[in-house]
Image (tube, rainbow, N blue to C red; front, side, top):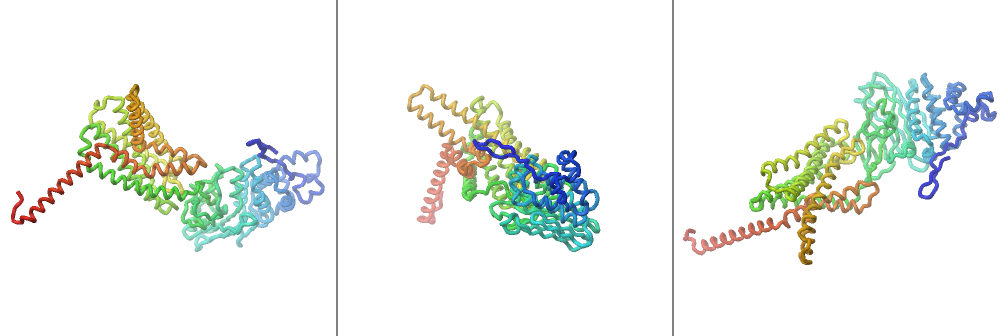
Length: 609
């Protein structure tokens, strides 16, 4: 046994203790203690499980039953589990001829059932060879490929492994295998179905055999032995089909029926020893069941459903997000309306024109991004709306990137005004540069992202209309530019603070207080306009981060449109002055109109001059 010291306590990490060996594996020789009849080679044989497998197939080749009783009576120690897994692997490798049903039923399935017992799940974590569970799954599937089905269907049932098989004709109406198995000794039975409709059967040979195997505990064993942060939420179903068979439909009853956690259809990649969502797609999902369409191949033979690895979204966050988005959209519409109303009065100089051009485009792109975010929320879920989801994700990606790049354009404009003489470049060149940065860069990034990842179905994440992370890391195409821009904009604010502070050096106390207030005002105005609130997003991507960070991030960004309206528009003295002039002019026109109307009512025959 191997132990490791963690947090001042000893924890067992490996266990190779084994009671099964060449002396006691065979039932008839268990009392004599030497199955090989000689003393010199006992140790050599005991070290080689492939030699034991060969001896087993020599002694009882018809059904391999001569080792079953001793294996089933052996304790489920990690060393014994590893021994049996290796033995099963060597048997499946050594078999060349077709396997009879009795042989499968009486021996191989019983051996596998012993190590798949729910009480042994925790012991798999102590086996030094972490891939032992993968070897077991591959060995069982390889053995099943050699199972010969005669005219009558087979039904080989054990508590923790159930095999069904049948001969099917291509012109049949359809076929299904239904499994109902307990995940452990106390839970109720969970159902899994292998479904073959007429369309699937038409692609197959005229007459063929199909074998399906169900495992209720193997998902948990794979998770425990590989130390994966995934949860299998249904039976693991292996399907052995002819090579020309293109697709299969599978129905899984969920073990955990939490409505807050979404489900992912997956296939087991036996080369990389991991679950892969590329092998399947979700067809239909409810709180109780999930229907998957999968594409079996030499690489993918076993399938299941995973419970979403993402923590359930807090109702508080959902409420904040949608209320904030509603307020943000209204604020942005008001902001753009005000900008359009006073555009002529506040853009008389080149500096003010470029400043308001940036603000207007930040507001417009954020408005479009928020609208597409709401559209995507209605499309999220099973892949029924896949094309719509791809379109929504593309526009969300593009417009949110445009928000950041227009914020970058504004920051560069500020740096240009602070560090360089402002009107050294023609206005037309500056405007063209701003539009190239604000729309050109995000468009290129968004097109490349969808073009590279969507052909391999790696553009979207399974649970939402947003960029994938687990398969292709497509989310980096948003995170990297956004965080880089936040850093540049933070440097811009620091330079503005330094320049503002220099004015106050050596001044009176009153002037220093005014300088501090001026610095605070600049920070308050520039923070939402330059997107620095997105810096809180770093805390939200850390595993097990506090809900407080998620709430702060949601509040700051859901209400970003409101902040832009307040700090970018309403607090601008020139805009307030222009609005006041508009209101005064409107009142004057209204007063003149009322006077004319009054005069006309008193002197109806008098024509207004």
